[in-house]
Amino acid sequence: MGQTELDEVMAELAGLADPKMREANEKRGDDHGVNLTKLRAVAKRLKKQQPLATELWATDDTAARLLALLICRPKEFNRDELDGMLRAARAPKVHDWLVNYVVKKSTHAEELRTAWTDDADPVVASAGWALTAERVAKDPDGLDLSGLLDTIESVMREAPARLQWAMNTCLAQIGIEHERQRARALDIGERLGVLKDYPTPPGCTSPFAPAWINEIVRRREQD
Image 1 (cartoon, rainbow, N blue to C red):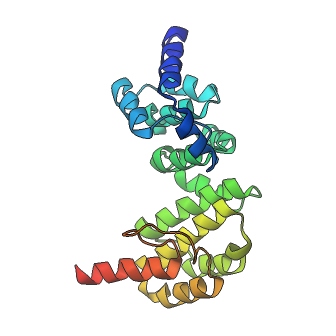
Image 2: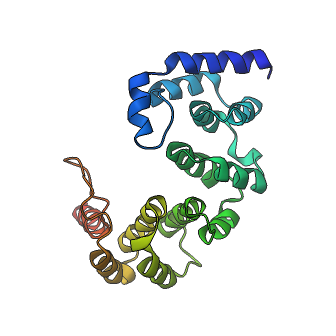
């Protein structure tokens, strides 16, 4: 991968940037103005290219980093590389895509989950809790669900926003997937009231854990 190719891709991303979209994204902490559908189309054309992905990430440009996460090969990153990338991923969308599209597919996901969950940086810790929520839903063997609920109960209400959101997701997944823990998960959610007043569009499920749990359980019982 040569500098010319990197320059061409960066120029293409610059051409796709929309000032109005950037203004809207910046309200959520994402400093880019590229339509994500168009970004995915660029990624589909480029296909998987690990060297180019590495160069795009190194630009420190949010749109370029998002593209990098779409064209990289997750299993080619080592543990320290993923840890460093997460700590550098301050834009929420970059953080989310890194965890969901790359870390979850890597061979280091479980090691990083346990390391990140107790990190002093709440943004890093939120990634650990996101990975924990994934395990709660898909691979819960070995997890201390009661202990997770203890931590959520004591920490979630006062946690910074991104960590709070990830803990709340974990709470909801415990209540949805594990019937024996459901009553306690519902009780914790009701007492803490986290995201109870979160604006939810019509037809969408509220992120308020009790509402989320009850809705998904209801749907499953109807199937």
